[in-house]
Image (tube, rainbow, N blue to C red; front, side, top):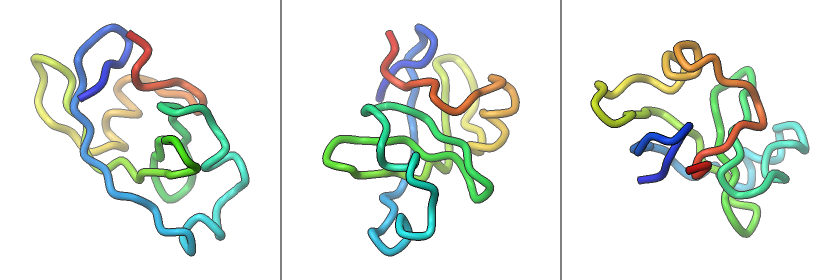
Length: 86
């Protein structure tokens, strides 16, 4: 669980391997924890210790679970926004 724009939010995500990170832009993995980054191959969230998660599903409180791409489109996400913003 985390928050997004003041709402409680559940996020389903998988860690990106170091090999997977090698093929991505430097911005992925270099952001503050909770920073969202949109790339051609999906939405990612930066975590501590240069860990990156590939977001697959997001559920805002009172709403249905949706694919990350649908969440990004509906919320009009921009790279650099953050989970955990309270």
